[in-house]
Each structure stands twice: as C-alpha cells, then as structure tokens.
Image (cartoon, rainbow, N blue to C red; front, side, top):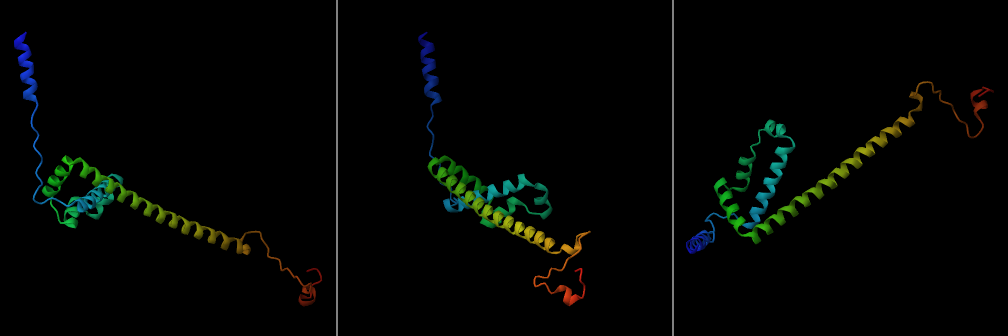
Length: 161
C-alpha cells in the first residue's frame, strides 16, 4: 500500500510540468496589422462560404491576395497567431477590435442597402405616377375635355359638349 501511494505521488509530480513562456517571434506581426489581417481573413472566409463559385470565377486566390496585400507570409501569420494565442489579454483585445471593425462595416453596408432600397422605391413610385398620368393609354378610356369657364360649346360649336 505504501508503494502504491509513492507511485501515485511520483506520477502526480511527474505529470506537472513547467510551461515555458513562448518567445516573441522575430517577424511578429504588430497588433494593429494583426487586427487588419484577421478582419480580412473573416471577410474572405465569409465570401468563400457565401458563394464560392463567384470567387472561383473571378480567379481570386484568397490566401495569395491576403499575403500580398499585407506583405506577410504563411509562416509569419502562423507564428504571430500562435504567439498572440498564448497571450490571452492581447489576443482578446485583438479579436474585440476585429469584431468592432466587422460591426462597423456591417453598419455602413446597412446604410448603403437602405439608400439603395430608397432609390428603388422612388423609381417604382415615379413609374406608377407616370402610368397614372397616361390615362389615354388605358384601353376603354376616352379622354374628356373639361371646360372650367363654360366656353366649350361656343368655341367648339357643339351644343352637346
């Protein structure tokens, strides 16, 4: 029994390990740039999920586009992501800013959509108004001349008018 207690205690101490602090990579992406990169990654992933066919037809390679736009490579992105993931406070701050960026973009898009809808409604309403002004084009409608001064029979020579 004493041997079992010592074995369990030894396993317990052996399982506890010292976790080394992750070293900052030499080519660490700055927090501001990381926010932009992660925002762009979210947009590209959404585009892929929304309609992959359109993305393929345009010939846009999301990874190549991302790396060339921000002048980074996949290893640099992986190391930076790993570093920030170990630093919870920094990573949480980065993702909060990414979320704010995406929400800001959504608000701008909502304003644009509302304006486009307003314009479409205005066009539809103006087309309806034009149609109501063109009454003589309606089948079975005969236009009638209205004389507000009561001079029509004298001018036109028709007593029944």
